[in-house]
Amino acid sequence: MNLAEMSGLDLMRLGVSLPGNMGDQGIASVIPMKIIEADEGRVVFLATADARHTNPLGSVHGGFAATVLDSATGCAVHTLLPAGVGFGTVDLNVKMIRPVPFEQQMRAVGEVIDRTRSLAISEATLTDMDGKIFAHASATCRIITPS
Image 1 (cartoon, one colour):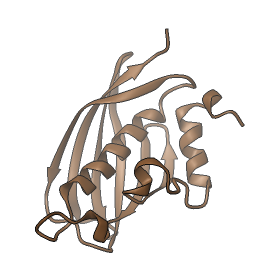
Image 2 (tube, one colour):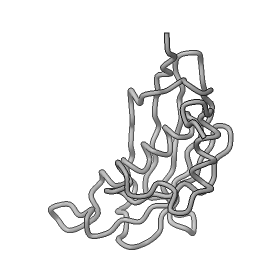
Image 3 (cartoon, helix red, strand yellow):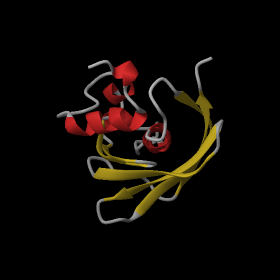
């Protein structure tokens, strides 16, 4: 299986199918996230904040929510891209609504709301498993096509 020859959607769906899918590589070693759904323009992640994610005041650092939402918005965009085409987040706007709790599974749903040839706009919401909103983000991603 050559990952470089897979579309973004196929890569995300491969991630869904793997046990512990994001493993302990890269950002997932710091922010444990698991992608559980991937469709065209939409992804769902699960993530849980733990003691590694504290700020100096002892609560969950806002970077936890921002990172999970950045992953959800970006991966939603990636599901629309063919093999060999990448993206980069050029703008991420996060609104923190309430403090993220420790050791409680959270759900992040990312969706693309518009796409042009060179840009994609996506948004994501971080909720608890009952649907209560903790943070919301919008992102602009630049589509990177090899020359």
